[in-house]
Length: 246
Image (tube, rainbow, N blue to C red):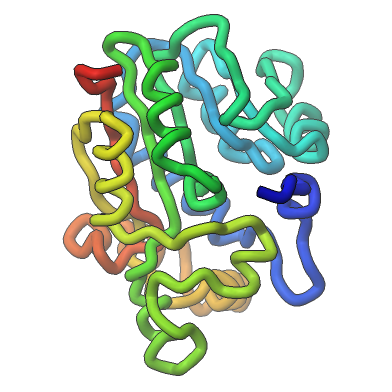
C-alpha cells in the first residue's frame, strides 16, 4: 500500500473544499444527539481537522485527548483550542494509548481508513469497561446524494466521488454497512440513526444560509425530521460498547 500524505488530504483544492459551513453547523446537532449516551468525563477524539469539534468537546468533558495523523491539522487545531487538549501525532493503526477512555469519537473519519474494521477493533480495546464509541459518517443515502444520482452527477449512492477520493475517502457508508463494520469489529451497537435531513448539497446549504433563504430554524426542522427519516440524513451514526471478545 502506498504511503498517504495526510496533510495533502486535509487541504482545500481549487475545485472542492474539505469542509463547509454546513459541516460545522452539523457538529452541534451531533452533540445534541449523542449527549444522552455520554459516560464519565473524559474523551478521545480520533481525527480533529482544525479543531472545531474538539472545541465543542472541551465544553462537555474535563479531559480531552486527540489522535491526528496530519501535523498541519494538529498545528491549527492546537492553536484554536489551547493547551488544555493533549494531541497525539499518530495514525490510528499505530497509536498506543496509555489509558482507556470512557468516550471515543470517530466523526466523519472512518470513511478515510484503509482497513476500517481492523481499526474499529483496535479502538474497542481503548474503551473503558463502561466506555462508548461514537462513530458518524457521511450518508450514502442522504436525500441530496440520491438526487445527485438521479441527475447523473454520481454513478450510484455508495460511489466515492473524485472530490471525496482527493480528500482521502475510501468508502461511502449507508446505515446498514456502517453497522455491519461495527459488528464485524466485535463491538456491540447500543443505538444508531441519522442526523439532519439533507435535501441540498453542502455548497447549496452554505449558499442558501448566506443568502438568507434558509435559517437556523429551518435547520432545526431538518434535525427533527431526521429523527423520523434517518436513511435520508446528512450523517449516519452508530454508538457502540465493548464486545465480549475485546
